[in-house]
Image (cartoon, rainbow, N blue to C red):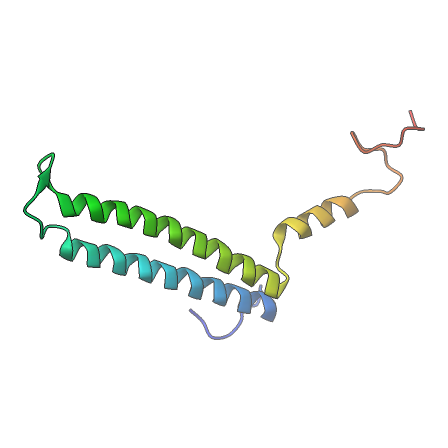
Length: 116
């Protein structure tokens, strides 16, 4: 990661992408830690279900739930980041589409009723 903004990015965009990388790497680090931690304890049980230790099944279910929780956390963190930096792509693209073209030009589905 570079410490100076790329020539193609503004300072604001550079700060945004730096924060996106930090959030992504943080959540990825938590996910890797959960996986490696669970592997350590997965085969400690002597009870088996379909030839696989029962603790493996329980930890697999826990990892699935933790993955879903991490996805939700990522979505919330990114929404907050987008809102704090005013980087909402949906609103910006909608505004760009609304302002595109000639104001008097009749566009399919957007034309005036009095023009034919």
